[in-house]
Image (cartoon, rainbow, N blue to C red):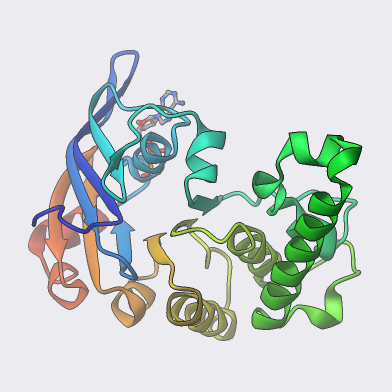
Length: 256
Ligand code: ADP
C-alpha cells in the first residue's frame, strides 16, 4: 500500500552480512496505532529487519521512514529519541537492580545532559525529574507492577521480566514499539496478560506496534496486519487470518 500518513515505511530493504543476504526486497508499511505482526522461521531475517529500522545494522539498500522522515542509517540512540522503542528477544534487563530502576532507565533518552549538569537550570532539571517520575508511575500502574517495584529483577518469572521490559520501553513514550518475541517462554495465562497490555498500550498510549511473534494464535488475536518472511524475503502479507492459511507460510513453518 501507500506510505502516506504511515508511522513507519520501509522500502526495498536489503541487509547483507559478508556473503549472506539476511533480508532483501522487504517492504513494510505500518499505519499509526496499527499492531503489525512479523513472522518467519528462525534465520528468516526478522531481527535483521528490526536492526535495519533501529539503526543497529543499517540497510545496504532501501529506505526507512519514520513519520515521513527519512531515518535510514540513523544511529540507534538517535532513532530512540525520534520515538522508536524496542524490547529484545533475550531480555536486556539489568540484574542486581530493582524493577523500578530498570524502568527508570527507559526515561534516560529524554534527559538533556546540558540541563542536568548546569546548576543554574536546577529548576528545569527538577521539573524534568518530576515529569520522569510521573510517567514512570503511570506505566507501573498501567502494567500492574506496583507490588514488585522494589524487587530485584533477577528472580522474577519470565512473564514479569517481559512485562518490566515492556514498561521500560513504554516510559520512553514511543510512537513505534518493536517487540521481539515478548511472549517467548510464557504460559497461556501470561500470554493473555501480555496480549491485553499490548492492546491497551495502543488504546491508551497511542503506540504503533511491530510484533515479532511465533505464536500464531497471538498474531491472529491482536494484529491488524502481518508480514511473513522466509530466507530473508517476503512470502506473504495481509490480514492474519488469511496469511496464516497461505500455503507458502505453512510450508515455511513445516518445511523449515
Ligand atoms: P530471525 O530473527 O528471523 O531468526 P535473523 O535476522 O537473526 O533471523 O538472521 C537472518 C540471517 O542473517 C541468518 O542467516 C543469520 O545468521 C544472519 N545474521 C543476522 N545477524 C547477523 C550478524 N550480525 N552477522 C552475521 N550474520 C547475521
